[in-house]
Amino acid sequence: MENTEKELFSQLAQAVIEGKQEITVALTNELLTLGTEPKRILDEGLMPGMEVVGIRFRDNIIFVPQVLISARAMKSSLAILEPLLSKSDISGAGTIIIGTVKGDIHDIGKNIVAMMLRSSGFKVVDIGIDAKVEKFLLTAEQEGAQILGMSALLTTTMGYMKTVVTRVRDDKLPYKIMVGGAPISRQFAEQIGADGYARNATEAVAMAKKLMEEFKTAS
Ligand code: B1M
Image (cartoon, rainbow, N blue to C red; front, side):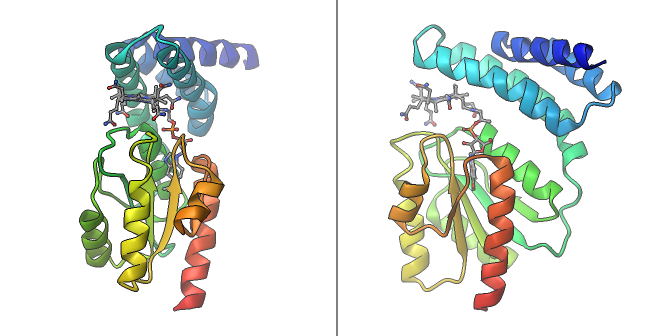
C-alpha cells in the first residue's frame, strides 16, 4: 500500500511536469480512492511536480506555454481536492481577504493558501489576481475583515505590497497584514511593515491564527 502510494505520488508529479491533465485527474482520484489524505496528495505529488516545472522554466528548458499546461493540470487536481480540504466559508475564526498583487497573475500558491485557510475555519474572500490596493480595502470593508493576505511571485511586483501596507497604516485601518510568495522573505515582510510572513500554506494558517489573536487583543 505504501509502495503503491509512493509510486502514484511520483506518477502524479510526472503528470504535472508533462502537463497531462487527464492523467493528473485520474491519479488524484486513484489516490483518494486508496484513502490518501488530500493534503498529502498536494504536498507529496502536486507540489514536487510544480517545483520541477519551476526549475526547468528558470533554466530555459521549458517555456511559458509548457508552464501554462502544467499549471492547468495542477489546477484540475486542486479543483478535486478543494471541497475535501475546505470545510466551510461561514465560521467564527475570522475573515481574510486574499489576493495576488497588482501586475502579477500567478495564483496557484494563493489558491492553495486560501484553501488551507478555509479548511482551518476562516472565511476567505479571494479577490483574485492583479489586485490593486482599492480592491483590497473595499472588499475588506464590505466583508468586515480582520486580515489582508497578499501574494506575489515576481520580484517586479513584490514592491506593490508596500503600497498596500503604507495605505493601511496612513488611513489608520485596523487590518493585520500577511504576505507570502516565492520571492518574499521574513526580512522583506519586516522591511515593508507587514505584520506577518508565511513561507507556505501550513505556515500561513499558523500566522493567520496568530494575527487574528493580535487583532482581537488590539480591538
Ligand atoms: Co511565472 N515566474 N512568470 N508563470 N512562474 C516564476 C515566478 C519564476 C520564478 C520562474 C523562473 O524564472 N524560475 C519567474 C519570476 C522571476 C522573478 O521575478 N525573479 C517567473 C516569470 C519571469 C514569469 C513571467 C514574467 C514570464 C514571461 O512572461 N516571460 C510571467 C509573468 C506574468 C505576470 O504575473 N505578470 C510568468 C507567467 C507564468 C504563467 C502564467 C505561465 C504561470 C502562472 C500560472 C498561474 O499561476 N495561474 C507561471 C508559473 C506556473 C510559474 C512557476 C513555474 C511556478 C509558480 C507556482 O505556481 N508554484 C514559477 C517558478 C517558481 O516559483 N519556482 C514562476 C507552485 C506554488 C504552489 O508555489 O506560488 O510559491 P508558490 O506558493 C507557495 C508559497 O510561495 C506560499 O505558499 C504557497 C503554497 O506553499 N505563498 C504564500 C504564496 N502566496 C502566499 C501568500 C501568503 C502566504 C504564503 O499569505 C497571504
